[in-house]
Image (cartoon, rainbow, N blue to C red):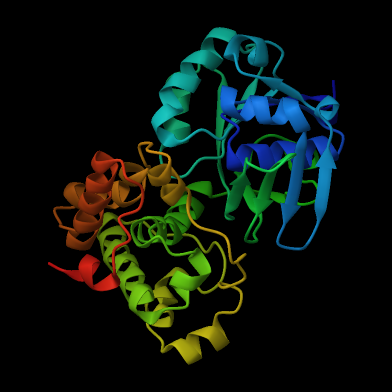
Length: 339
């Protein structure tokens, strides 16, 4: 078997997973989507529509890919497993892989956060696990028929080096993929950008609208500066993901709106409807990934003998919103800045 003939299972296919799986199926890859029953019903009813920021609009009939809701059925013939679950489900999907996937299956974590690949490696029964980083935002439009996954920003998916030919399998139209020798530094670099997920969730603002407002960018800048200070003490150098180098981000984000809008066009290359996955989690009453984003900075600060008060405050605000279960609290920037 060549890698191009590999059976690819997307485990936990929500927004990112349906988009990735759709692009791979469109390129002729053998794809199975392991999904929640709600998404399965939508896919089985009308197939899948994959759209993106570059105006591609492609449709797949349900015959172009397999849809499964049971891990045993989905995983039994997997050669490659792309894990796109939320971080809170990492151990669960790892145990399912251990129970049902072939011993030769290679696992890729395409999840937010820093340590999901390590958590998978501890639970998948000795199967090989590699980390990855997805830089873009995907909007899920499940009320449409066919079910639509829309990539609302740009970027190249980076995956850990070590599997010859893997880019040939995964690098397809609309889902540009490359390998990287230092994926951990890239994950820390992506984490800096992901600190904004909570601000979108707390404000209820579309991502492009929020980033166009200096009041919100100033909060993000303060978060990134705080995180960079903690990383420096811990000896971590975040990798360059996209746009300006990490060290310059706070200064650029604090620029007046007219200058920022002129200088940061690539950062603002975002579909107007895009929000964050954390916003979606609050809207759906689900547990968010705050512990894997701001929480990663808080844990690193504790290990380094420091505090990260802004990360503490934003974490507390997101947890309050989770507990209320009423969606985004629609806070103003001034309410987040309070001590």
